[in-house]
Image (cartoon, rainbow, N blue to C red; front, side, top):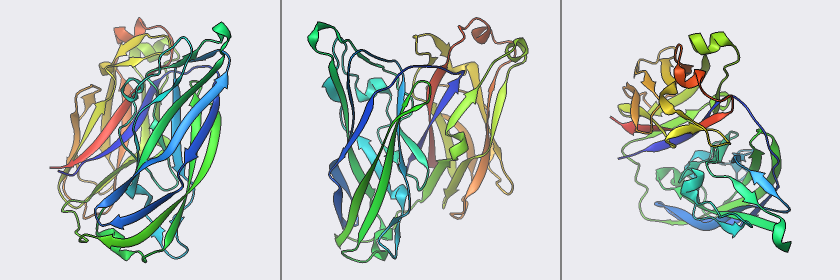
Length: 340
């Protein structure tokens, strides 16, 4: 069964802290030699280092394909390329190195042409270092494999041609300020392809618009708490499918959490989709949950793109919000499209 995933950070309120150095290493080159696609081990390594005390309870890392991946005549589709985190390691004095699971990282992140995608949408584990004991230096590493999807689309490319990909990495602190930016060039070469150019039976795609990647609900006044607040992202979700499909959403953490460890239940926020224009899909209102929930179903779009508005809303007179400490609370949502 074909599945595609897309991750979005959803936040309540806003916040602060100081970040450190961003570094990116790369092996710079991969040869595509099979219609089944390839996985290039340790294609990138994102790492941070510095000296002194470090107190970074939340942080984010993103990647963006800066320009079309071209060989001069043809364009390689960015959304056929993904980054897969493999482990974490390093040295944090007085603190343990958080794992991929503890951080809450997507296990696979597909690139999008010109759009920022998040390798760490919103860390659920902080980075902390103590400069005491005579050793103030610290470092933290995340290696990534690069995967190129297989398929008949590879047959259109000239053998031995080389495509240049420019990938920009960004490191954000929990005030959402950019604290590090690195660009790396990567070469993809089309070798003689083994296997058969078989077209997958189902072609599905899903994408969150750039203006909706980071959802934000703000409660500022007494009326906001009593009457609830909502935010709408027009054309926020884009879908195409050559078969009947359904959309699901899952929160990757069990609660909304704040940098100070306070929590709010996921069902504090409702999500609804609104079909746009000729989109005839059925939609279903849900309260956010750590269990996968169906939010829409529709017929084949004949591979054309259809749109949904996205609406996040809090509930009227919700005691969870009335009694909550005024902080930033975040969770990460996973959107999924599957054949129906």
